[in-house]
Length: 244
Image 1 (cartoon, helix red, strand yellow):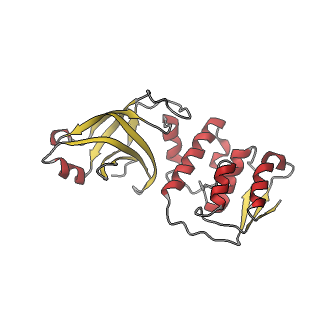
Image 2 (cartoon, helix red, strand yellow):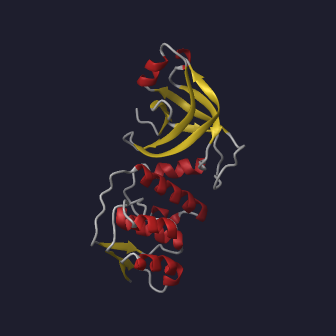
Image 3 (cartoon, one colour):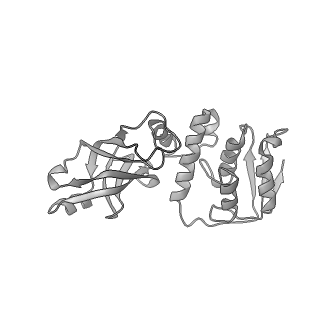
């Protein structure tokens, strides 16, 4: 069975189990939740992992620091959200009945919403560029967090240099859409390569698939350069050649 989400216990470094849906989230998210804001999350149709069942077979198992893992269609982790419980939840062998809902109350330091989960569904198997072109401004903000989260999970990225990348400028209307187009030109559909000037500078220092010097050729973006003037200045400073 392919699941969309897993629960990971940070303290014990073990997968507690998996589910296909999460209830209790707000319809839309905000940038950050306040310290006193907790969510009563419902992990629907939850299935416990064999490893966790084995551990709980002869003792109680308390959890307090969890990660909600986002999984792709093959069950690989592509994103995560830290979930801090307001009180410890203790599992015993009698709790480990598959197919039931598991209710856990806790705090999400990084905003997560039902809208986020819907957009994550699009990000489970990215094969097409520019899917963000029809998003609302709010959805674009969520999408930026999603692709940043996906990029964080990736590791051992080999940087290359002296390449030419072709940026599709047809759908660039503002700064965030330029970052989307730039990230996809370098790292493929759903690719990330910065979301503000500071994070762009970090990416240009290496570890994100490419390191200067390299060239970007922006197509279909005539007479719009004032929108991304500051971004182009940073790229130039890092020895990136720009062709319009």
